Length: 209
Image: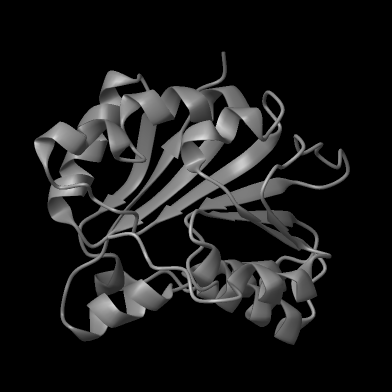
């Protein structure tokens, strides 16, 4: 479901214009001295602000299609005084226009919309159509970290990864059964876990070419 934009959201985001972009975006040029990690669907920013705080040597970009949601993320970035995070209101379907070829070191997809109806399969962020876009922007040997509470989406995604010829590791259908110490829980992850819903996770490598 698409969120209804709250009044004056764009105006409020102007207060964060030093690291938040709304509207037309120029292609991002990677800092050669730093890795570039990108989260698709930043939501309210729990994940990206925590991981950026832990890794100040890495630049992070968070993409979110809903301006209303990214406002909450922007406030968290400001509260933590993070200088290595940029947030962009942007549709991931156009991601190849935003990043230069092989400019991104790692992608994160956390609890994306499962688009459960079969006719909507091409909208899923793990569909082969999207995987080919990621292949263009990821460095050779780059990785995608994928989490979801939706087992159907997870199984579908594993099939799509195989179809695209990708290498998959660390596959689990219950991440929290033996939770890695470096795992960062998103707001959805905490909610689902507290409700007893197991979390599916894997790492996908785009093989060197």
